Length: 278
Ligand SMILES: Nc1ncnc2c1ncn2[C@@H]1O[C@H](COP(=O)(O)OP(=O)(O)OP(=O)(O)O)[C@@H](O)[C@H]1O
Ligand SMILES: NC(=O)c1ccc[n+]([C@@H]2O[C@H](COP(=O)(O)O)[C@@H](O)[C@H]2O)c1
Ligand SMILES: [Zn+2]
Image (cartoon, rainbow, N blue to C red; front, side, top):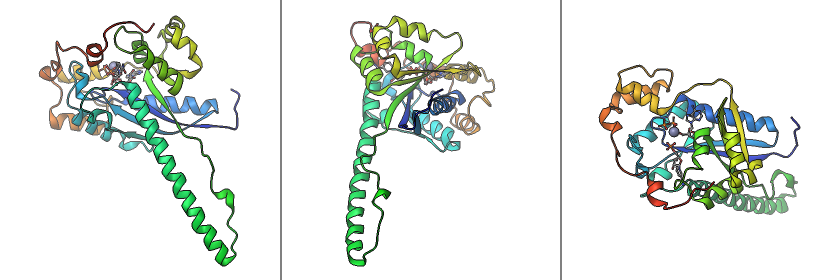
């Protein structure tokens, strides 16, 4: 692969239920980072897990406080992935594009604080230099440092959900693929390439949709973890040990919790009225 000297800093944002978080969710970040580094064009500086709020109303979705706690235990072994509670602490379910915008905005604010602190520091050093006639190299401060770009990290099923009628607004899909970009973990045999081909909006921005093949295929999902728990079967090595302990301690998943939100319309379906984005 051809490599260029200029790299763009990237923050990976994964949204979802994380009900509960599994080792596969953590793998998504590792796979995406390896892929982006391999291109030579990107440097991944951070990963963010953003659990959805209870107001999403997905069947079987347990309280965000527990989902957050488990995600926080799971990332203890990672030095670059963090958990963010902003999305799930909102009063209403919010669209993914708003979560992306929020994190992009936070990065912009952090950068402007950094820049103004740097400017003040430069002024202080300049004054000192004038007093002591010391030379301070100016290149120790980076001017106009480019803002890191937030990218949506997801699995093939989430990318394919973009085409589900009433689930996503057309303009949101357009903004996600044009402004932010998507990195999608596929499975061999998954039909994501064909899905992109069939969608005009995804096809138009295909250069901003990165598809990463997971060669070490596994079918771990939160649904299967919850099913195993309901049946009293072991989930060890499918989720981190600390998460197994947390689930046991709080007796989290059973037949009753699986019926939570049963019969209630999923928040995006309730909010959107018409139109497929394809
Ligand atoms: N085995 C997997 N391979 C690729 N992507 C995955 C896998 N498991 C989860 N993901 C991705 O992780 C993100 C969060 O998904 P989510 O919280 O729904 O997990 P899940 O395991 O799919 O749960 P559920 O079974 O409850 O739908 C989504 O983008 C989803 O596509
Ligand atoms: N219109 C939208 O922005 C939209 C629609 C459906 C799902 N989502 C998000 O996608 C994720 C899907 O999670 P699940 O796969 O667990 O249902 C959630 O974070 C949810 O908020 C966003
Ligand atoms: Zn899912």
